[in-house]
Structures are given as structure tokens and as C-alpha cells.
Length: 231
Image 1 (cartoon, helix red, strand yellow):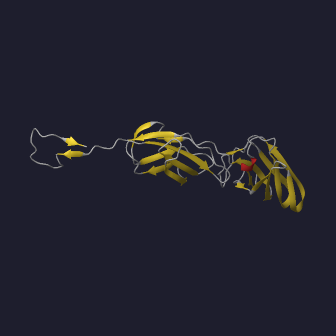
Image 2: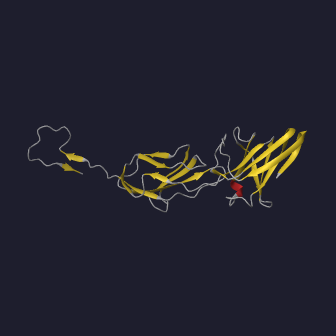
Image 3: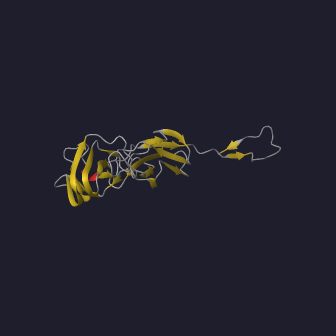
């Protein structure tokens, strides 16, 4: 449904609903997780300009479990140009997404609902991990912000790192303890949603390198029957 608040010119206008996403969609800001499989085309003949509000009832749409995490996007012309996000609100009484706009064009709905992140490396239950290294995970569609936790226990009550990471899918750590078991996990965040925690992976760090005691480094004249000692 489109509500027009002002109009310049006289003529005809129409709005069509299609049950698929635009095949050529380009976005000025694609921070959403995925598009719903619909598009609306608002066209005109003879009308110079207009402004108003588009109201989309989400009751019959797919992926509408969390409508407050949906946003309407618009581009000025069907199959041309970039979509921009409209300031979108959700009316729980009427079950409508509502966004003000000007002009005509094409509308789609982006969902900010995030899936669960997937950890990459080190793989789960890995042994011999260096005490200075990096943790990596797969990029999660719909976010560039993650929260990483590393702990000495699976309940994450002994936190070693609790870090917010922007625009990256890895974290470089330093000075972990030798021969120690660690657990790690991440969540993804965007402006409307926070994902579930990833699965918890654990790893064990490498053994502490042995320290040589005797003979001292560079010793000359060592006896043939002397003993080598280390810690």
C-alpha cells in the first residue's frame, strides 16, 4: 500500500508486486544479511513528482519471524541505479513496515537477521598451537562487527580476551601460556541484530621450549665424558 502526501502533475500511477528479487540489484549500503524474495515497482505516467509513505504488510511474506529487523530499500528506477536504505519502522498492530520516500521506482526488503558465525582456524581440538598467532572465522553476511571471546574454561568464566573487532575476520593474539587449553567463540552484530554465539572451539598451545643448562653456550674445552643438562 502506498499513501501519497503530496503530488505535482496529473496522470496515472501503479504499483506491482513481483515474487523474486531483482537480478541486477546494486546497493549503496548492503549491510543487510539477505533480501526477501519480493520486489515492488511503483511507476507513473504524467506525474512530475510525489512524496508519501509505502506500507508493506509482512503477514503473508516469507522470513517474517522478526519483522522489526527488516528494512525497505528503494532505487529511483526499475532495473537501474543503486538501492538505498529508507528509514523503516514496524507497526506491530497493523503488521506493516512503513517508510517515507519521494519519487517513484523499485522497492525491496532487506533482512538484518544474522545466522550463526562459523569458526575457521585453528580447527576444533587442535594441539600444538603457537602462543603468538591468530584466530580466524568465515565472514558473516550482514555484518562487519564481531565480538570474540577466549577463555581458559568452556563456561567462559576465565576470560583471556573479550574483543570487539571491526572490518576483519581474524584476531592476532600474543603471549598465551604454554601447554594450556583454551576455548574460543564469536558473535556477529549489526544495527538491528546480534547473532547466536558460534560453536565453541578449543585448542591446546605448544609445549614450553626446554632451556639448556650445561655446558653454557660457547664453552670451549669441554671434557669428552661431560654431561649435557637441561631444565
